[in-house]
Length: 445
Ligand SMILES: [Zn+2]
Image (cartoon, rainbow, N blue to C red; front, top):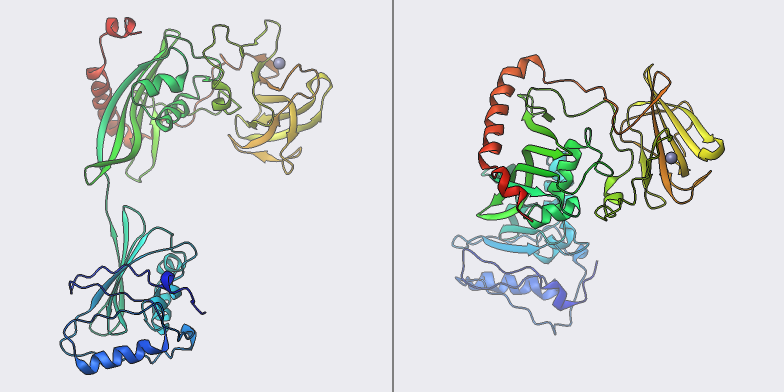
């Protein structure tokens, strides 16, 4: 591997802790060895090695013997090098630039599997710091992300010891409340709620509220959620801890609870799961909600005699199985066009019509999980434009998918019930305390 671009080679960002001098390393040429040897002979107190980019003699690094180690002088201090990982950089290239024999990479890669994986997949833009004494790697520090740092040190027996340092975010709670005037996302943005938090909220309440069709102007919500800080700076938003959403006069509340085993989920204040055996909306509502907010709800095409709900959505929008079940029909069915029917247990079935196409591997007889994509929105059969026609049947009877009472997932387990109730009360109290008085919200336009 010959590096002919000299300027490029001198990348090892010269950060030095031991000496105050800059050491530019990287140019590997025949004279390097000589230069170092001469320097050793001179026993200069500070090693300053600068290479001219005009140096004509270049040799392949691979040809340098691994025995390129020299006697470390008694007064010689180890040097730290800070290296920014470039696109396509490998540890070997970095070691070559720092003139560390490749045999030492092998030693690194013989450490545990996880370390090996980390070191063989360096992320461009991240920093590596290497402490080199002579040609011997003494310490390697790799900051993988803001929270995790890998540290490998050579001990007195010349063995490499791996340590992983982990930091934690400083979690701060933020309270926010909003009223929907135009779109769900806009209402959040107006009070500083990021789209990702709005999306999380929609997922929490998505089992009860159809965010594509149910929400109305004047609906309100409030949230208590975490913001994650590191060294005093906000990194990103964390989890929603408690939330309430009021739509068309009905209020839904959700509490996040993490049990002793580390499992987190959302529950109603009295411990019932927020999750249901069925999704309320079988299409990605974000694709639809962009249309929400016009005076005449253009997507609300529910007809009285209609046996289901229509979701107008761009052609190709993924359609998801609303619950776990088995595909009992896949194929054309008269005016329904390309249709999928899923049977869920003995009493429930759902139907998805006018599909543009199916997910190939999911044919009749295949089992599907809740939320799994089964096909894509289209306009096959009798349809004026691309939309999903969705039907929900209980014991063969059509039910309004928007209103039907859905069976719930498991409630909070008995073992955690007391602890949950305590935390639930605390969180709801926190949420309530901050709530603006009713009149303040209703006059806020
Ligand atoms: Zn329809």
